[in-house]
Length: 396
Image (cartoon, rainbow, N blue to C red; front, side, top):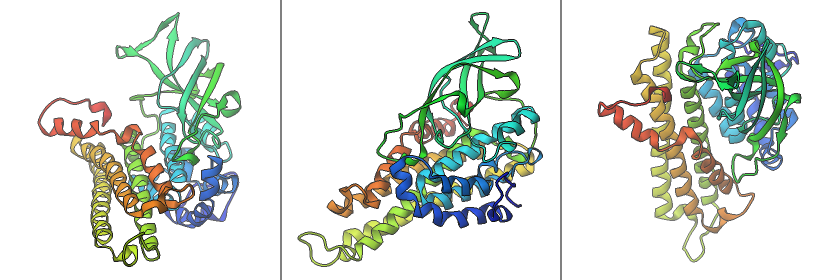
């Protein structure tokens, strides 16, 4: 399958999405320091990614998108993650959220994603906005946090509670929540993303005040009815995020091991005989980390492949395959953090300085662990499931 064409054409658009990601990866790697410093994707990096159609890979084909299969999406995130974790995170978040296009009226979805050059939507995880019902749509206000890609997005999605006649409107007995899509120029992006890791994701806050949003530019945040069908839209979006976050964390761990092996061949630890690579503890640590990384990677990709096979065979993922993605995604994040911590400890003072790659991996992976997809409570939830106890299936 070829990547979808962008209004700004590129020779990359003639490649498959995975080939395009591999072609772009060296450019991303070259700019990793700039991405970290400026806390956003440099324009040449963003344009190369957008022109290759990577942000549109989860948009239905009928709307001009790629409608890519789930396993390939995760492999693309891994390729970019090995070049730069922040870039991979921003791309995967953008492409995953774009699957909401399958739940919107086609004309509105095209306007937001495929009719706008280099279109990306930045969203928010919390319903901190208010959408007041007015004729033809809503008046939306709110201050929203954790909006990945806010610096390069040209649309933002305010997650808002619907208010009608002064009261919260209900849906299935609960307050109705909608994503309300607003052109980027109608909101103020607030410079709040001052973190120690994953700085290049540009995950700032944004604020909008009394902006009119047409009804067609909104979608339910949970269980929206599919308007454009397709196999990949049967996989719960939260699990797509889980797998993407997990593979990016594992890419950080892989880079950390690789860089440590290079360091160990030249560093002579203080008051020790020989190079770092000659120390039995370093040798043991690398071997153990390799086993942990490869095991977590195999588990994650196996769960991704199986849930895709499930959907292709039956139309819907089984609870078993959903459980596997939830657990393997969380486990990948937690294992990646342990690997990086272990490698960091063996580096000594070399890794404590700003600008050291292993220091950056340490910071990046510990920002990822704080994301909702990496919560340790997921282990408890899966344990309850295995023990035959009821769980919140909405989290899977």
